[in-house]
Image 1: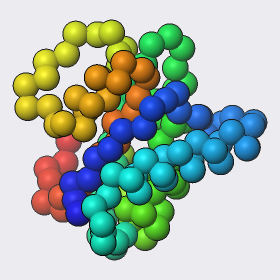
Image 2: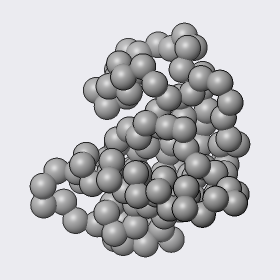
Image 3: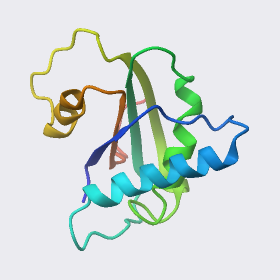
Length: 134
């Protein structure tokens, strides 16, 4: 199942929002996008993972660090059993109108750009235990 990647049309909802209904709706949207991107028969894994998200946006954008937690929560039971399996995270924001080299880009991220609206590219990978420390 890993690596697993998918896109969600944005904008994301910050963990700090006071509108709890909006936050729950956002989590449901992320959950549905992940579920739709999974192959039939895929089950939530129990291994430690790395969670990476890039938000491609136009206009205003929430802080990158505040958008991570709701998305990680939304993947519980779909991609992994519990979000405590996420042992490494990465969050980035990029203007959708920027210049990007797309050599080797996955079809998933290309799809996001082709839709022409704000989107998030989310990738969950197996955590590599033999990494060098920075």
